[in-house]
Structures are given as structure tokens and as C-alpha cells.
Amino acid sequence: MANISNSFQKCFSCDLTEKENPLVSIQYSGEHKWVCLECLPQLIHGSKNLDDYI
Ligand SMILES: [Zn+2]
Image 1: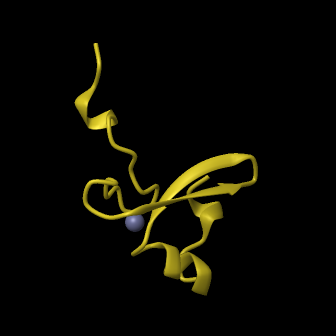
Image 2 (image 1 turned 30 degrees about the vertical axis):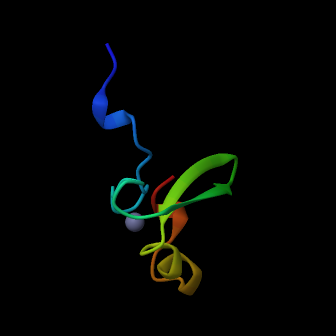
């Protein structure tokens, strides 16, 4: 049975869906992740660390 909550991709960090905020696809350490435009700057500036989520 399809899970409706899985029909939208989610930000790996804050769980916002692509319906609420544009998501950017990133590839890191062999992992594919989606990150929203709110969290992307925090990754760039180092206040969030991808290693904490993988
Ligand atoms: Zn986010």
C-alpha cells in the first residue's frame, strides 16, 4: 500500500517536503540526500554537518 507521506521528497535535516520549500539534491559520501533552501546555507556555512545525518 502506498504511503501518501512518501509521495513528496523531504529535507533530510528539517523534514520539510518539496511541497513546502524547494529542495536541492545533493550527493555526499555515496549517499543521495535532499536538502531545502533553508538548510542549504547552514550546510555551506558549517553550522550543520552532513556527517551528523549519515
Ligand atoms: Zn531543511
